[in-house]
Amino acid sequence: MLIYEYQPTIQTFSLLEPLLPGCVRERIKAIMDAAPEAVFFCKIEDLNPSIRVYLLEHDPVDDYTECHLLSCDRIGQDYEYLSLSVEQARSVERFAAQIPVISRS
Image 1: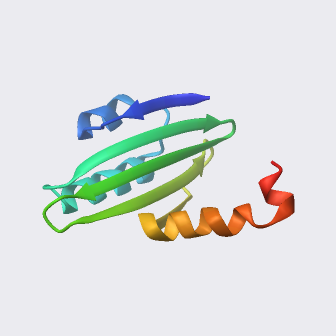
Image 2: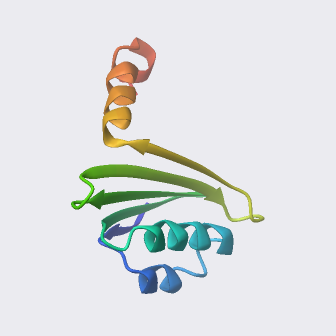
């Protein structure tokens, strides 16, 4: 289920406090604080019991777009984090499409 999809602010993530563990909110805040000139776009999915956060960072000044991917569950404070450039993400998508088992799903 899609929970959120839009251009986020730090306040957005404080509203999602009951859903996202504190460590995930802190990681997102650190990413956003580290690039004040960047524009961010976010998608949050509830895949009970997991939650996935897709955070795109576009920096027009330094001319890059980074994909920040976070995944957590509702138990504990553990989460997974991966950062990829858009080019890397597209390359993974093309590679996965070549594998018959994956491309059918």
